[in-house]
Length: 572
Image 1 (cartoon, one colour):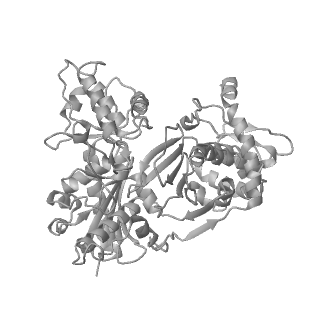
Image 2 (tube, rainbow, N blue to C red):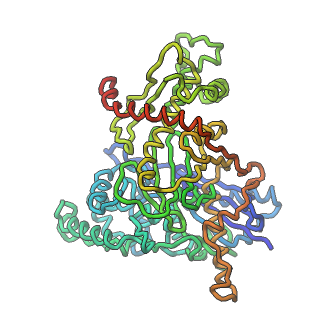
Image 3 (cartoon, helix red, strand yellow):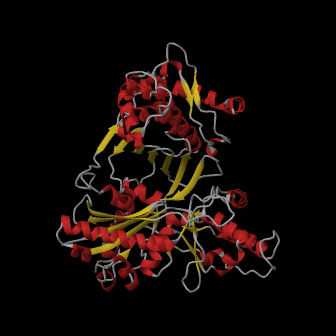
């Protein structure tokens, strides 16, 4: 019997939809559609450096466009777009931490503020102190506190707060539900109840009451009335639970009227980080999803809530409520890429560029430089001949590096002046920074059994061995398609279908056969999921000798990082 799932991902720059075949164990992608949108221009007489806003209606138009693309591709690959009538469930993912305000009449109140809007850093720090748990500046609750202070009339008109993913779910179902992972990016979750923290909500309401009464100048005349945060936030749902069904309006947006008449299930809308973990089949404590790109993100599945506050660690939840500890580095591979660019003259046979030549290689030539340099990187000793690097071209809040500009190579001499050493030292500095940020997790005894690697670094799979040796842990590479987050949303849809089908059976509750979210992901075949790209395992195990060698270099690196502020002051 035909069984298809839709996965929708609303990103910062565009929206993608994947149609997957749920009758195949690997849940392969059948067709992909895309739509795009832009940031809104900043208001008059304001700087654009911190303002990042979008029109939620643009996401809906992008969804329509993406579904048109799906139909066009199905007409080619399947000769029949009517298989969309066989969609049994829909999953939704979106850029986390956004602020979408909805009025009592269902209208959007002002533009949506995105995760990258930087106007509420002070509110994040204030709420961290008030709650006793880390509230990053990008958290939705920090945004709403800023709104209450700086646009109180807008806050007073707000009947519901949601996120980009939550807004799309609302337009498709008419309900304000949210997956627990996405919800945890809005407001802290109590791990004992798997719902918003009641004590923290009370503290927030008290703060808002003070603001609305003009205690801090938040209200215009002391009469601003803002609803309790409990009544503003969406209902928290776990993976597999009811996230609504497609309404007639939702079916019209998707262009598939039958989805409404069938009551097609919608999984609770989730955040992109949560869906990315699902797309990497990560759900068990000890697994860590690592993405190495211009920034680095490591999401560790925990077995309990984090204790205390650390500048290095952010917190959210997996789709089933398990705690996720996030280590995020602003300075990813940018410094390494810059060093590679410096060796771009390799393409010209080692001759330096003449006057007027570009000082930096183009993106296409950079790939050729990497190809030429990477064998030397892989041959370089763990200590890079004594060469160390600092990658801080920008600030690094999690490591208390407040300013950029201290990036450089240190300990250079005639014996180690080699492209392989320089590039490898640059890469190791990023891996070491990730290890530094992870030390607080190790100190609390969190398990680390497997690092699942993605991002640009996977173009050189052998670097997975370096990461395995640096962290003394197994590293797995999944060759994921570009639509991996949307595929993760489709897996959330598939799990919702599994649970709904089991709950609708005539068996008693014991015999319904509902499996856990982690067991469901474990059962996904890691074979061909896209028809052209495989998610098959490539694993690297740590080597005891190299582990000891990298640990010795790591200890030297920590000493160098301790001097970073003085280096920065000297060179800036």
